[in-house]
Amino acid sequence: MTEILKITKISLLAYGIVCLLYGVLAVFLFDMVVAMTGFNDPFQSRLFGGVLLVITIYTFLIVFKKDWEHVKLAYLVLYSLILSTIIMEGAVTVMLYSSLSAEAINMHIMDLIIMPILLILGIYSYMKQEG
Image (cartoon, rainbow, N blue to C red):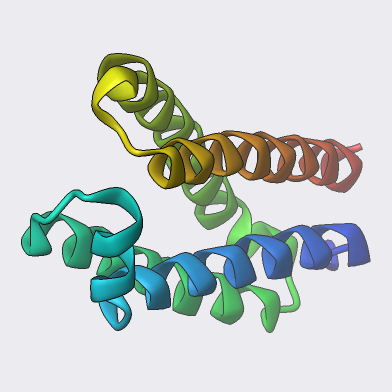
């Protein structure tokens, strides 16, 4: 029985807080997102925001577990989701760059800065946890 390290809990909390902020922005402050990006499909944005809020609950539940062996698979699933999100965000930014507003481009670039930092922190904490 291996206890969860502090760095792993910090990486999960950081991931959960970022997902919480983006989830609340996408679900409850949708009008602000539309004003910033000009993208006005409410279903897609609110669906993604709901997924982010579920991920937030999931990360906070994992933080309170004591045994690493119980949360290892959940940890790997969370960080594989962020990897796919980075790929999709990069593809959307490249494909729609010419049609996006300046605010939307800034938001995408900010996403492409924050998400790899979270991924690197998650990989580092996983390596420390396993090693």
